[in-house]
Amino acid sequence: MSLSGVDSVPNLRDQVHVLGFPVGGDEVSITAGVVSRVEVQSYSHSHSRALAVTVDAAVNSGNSGGPVVDCATGNLIGIAFQGYAGSSVENQGHMVPTPLLNRFLKGVQRGNPGLPSLGVHLQLLQSPVLRSKLLMDDSKHTGVLVARVEYNSSAYGILQPGDVILKIGSESIQNDGTCTLYNRRLAFMASVQKQFVGDQLTVQILRDGKEMDVQLLLKPPSLLVPRGQYDVQPQFVMLGGLLFTKLSLEFLQSWGDVKDAPTHLITEYYSSPVEERRRDVIVLSQLLRDEVNIGYGYESIGLEVVTEVNGQDFMNMVEFIDLLDKAVMESEFVELKVGQDKRVPITIVLKSDELVEADLRIRSRYFIPSNRSNHFKKAEWVLEESS
Image (cartoon, rainbow, N blue to C red; front, side, top):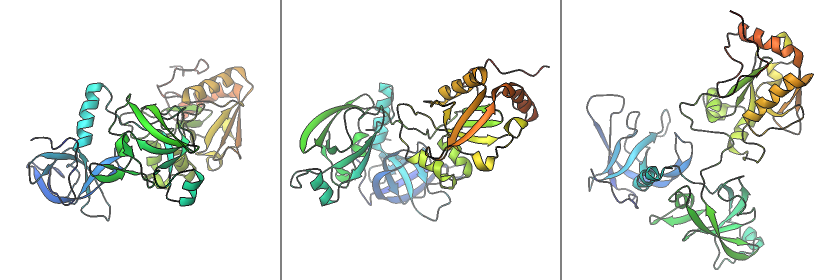
């Protein structure tokens, strides 16, 4: 089976066959349909957005990874990867098109198949008043507005909020955020994702009414809350019966559906940026009852985000644990600031000299072998239960 055009996507209403073994079976199953949509969509496994093709052939569990074949030529035009399980939507399956397949294979040869990201938050420029304020000339300027630049991203230190992105490489960006690619209008991120991590990308911008070209070194996405993790054990630490964990998509999915998780955690997932002094979101996920934490109830402090330990902020989980250990060994109290909003913090105070015995007691009572996951070194103050 030959790979179809590596720099083209099928046309709407092209007839296709989807091959696979849906719901088991010994014989290959073949379903037929047509191409119904070509656009940037959300991928179910990586939870990132990339170019995908929608077909109305049945794509069920067991089809994922199976070939999608052009009926006219017999060539491979994509790989089936997701449908709408349990949804009221019918006859909608998706495939990874050949340009992304070819790009992935080249990326493997280069040692980094991941998709790059500009690392910017954008606003569409369909308002003529806003375009006028940005000194855009409608006779020659179209583009999108940079609203925020992520820390340490491809655009960090080069693009600025208020810049207008006019072109990505040779592709002009329209005011609705699309560009012409594969002979159709697509979200311009599809053009960025044709490149590789480590490539230099020329971006034309409008800044204070002046056009200029800048060079970006492309990097992978920088996410505050990790997502799409497989075979990764969750990170945690326990102190005085308070269990802390790093926020992740998998943690949010413990509610069954992300939208059913607490609103402030969903906001952290979708909207909070990576900052120089904030690379992880630490959540108080559980409260194990003990006399050391009397007066604190899970209903009042549970699922709050931790912001400070003894008046100090922290960059990530490692620094957070180091601050906890230091407070236990060097301070009279361990004081934590938690809250859904930094403007209205809740204070939790634990007595340091009670935490050592309490840790051993709580681990014994609740059958917990260690007060932290194996990602982190054992604390000097932790006692072991005598055999």
